[in-house]
Image 1 (cartoon, rainbow, N blue to C red):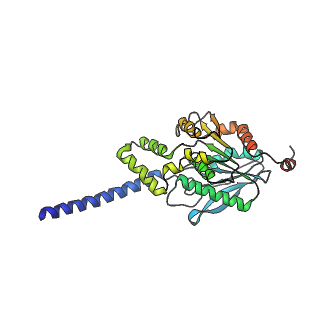
Image 2 (image 1 turned 90 degrees about the vertical axis):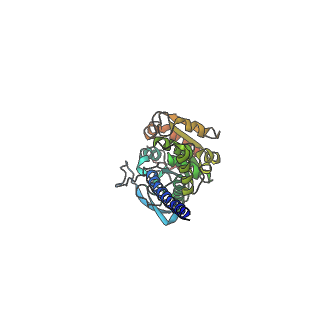
Length: 300
């Protein structure tokens, strides 16, 4: 009888210890996977234009903050989405290019980033939900016009996901997107020195449960096949965050894509600025300027 009491007691203690260790492991994992927050403290300094600070709702009764910058024309709008741990200022170097080409520009902070509200966790699908919220605000405030989506890194993957679910987007630009979130997670685990079996395998399953999505369902290699508008995919030849092989895997899933490999690493804004004419050319081809818009442009 004593043996069984000791055995049951031992198993009970082992169970409690396992639960405590698992809880601590989950807390540590959540901390490791949480993005840093870089607040916005001032309006951008742009020549001859003024950025308007905006706030608009997203999922869970939360609010996002962004900038609206009116371009010369009223019928072409670009929404720019930053990457993990960044904020809306990250893509500011692209704004002068777009303004000069006549586009109005919307930049915003996704949840848990910049000056937007805090949520329980961040994920690529939540980035996509916030892109949908930005589109909804834009359509309410400026109902007429074409919309282009531009995103960087996780923001690019989310842009592909959001665009694949809609038929009201006129052009998409993906900068430094990964091909599959599971591969991104495996690289992260390797960098942390965590073996895939059994811990890494468990971590991937845990993350899928937390975000409420299977990686295969939200992977860019799947999303890209559902995009029905002109698509430009750009990647840096020296990207050490997302290997260049990812972009070749990504674009192999569709024939309806223009691929540009540029010099530089993961942060492509310097290269994009240098090759700004190619970006503008892509957007002009995707969304031609209507005759009345040309007639109403300011003279040079």
